[in-house]
Image 1 (tube, rainbow, N blue to C red):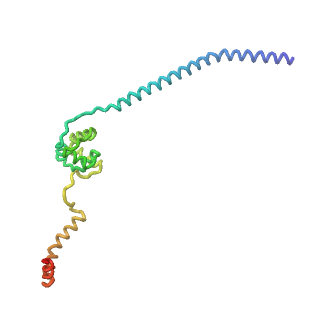
Image 2: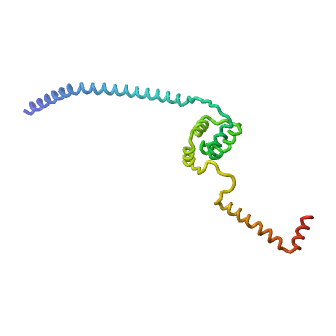
Image 3: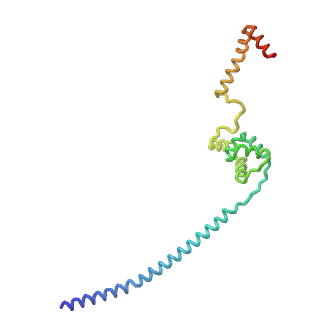
Length: 188
């Protein structure tokens, strides 16, 4: 009897394996087809990304040179119009002070980027320019020549100016012998 039981079990196992194979085989074929399709799609995506990168690199390499009319007087006129110093204009454009000076003298020409910056400044109102100056960190457009009234150097200069008449008066009070000795020493 044990032999019949093992035979039946083996037969049942064979039939179930056959049924499972028949049901799974189409699914495996579909899975294989989908894998092939995914692989093809990945190849297409890679090819398209290479193409996009190539085109964007070509566009980045091509920078049109826009030649705008430039005269050295335009930089000076622009500075005077907006009451800017050479230093503040240089800071706004991201260049050095000597560069602005050379532009004004006509020895060099601004590059395209700086020319665009000059055009942008020319088109700004005074309020917009003040906002941009404060954003860059400049308080005023043009610093006045001389010392600022509240500075320590100005205070010292005022004290010296006040002391000059007092020193002259003190020198006159000195005995005549010392002044004559000084005069004689100067003559020699």
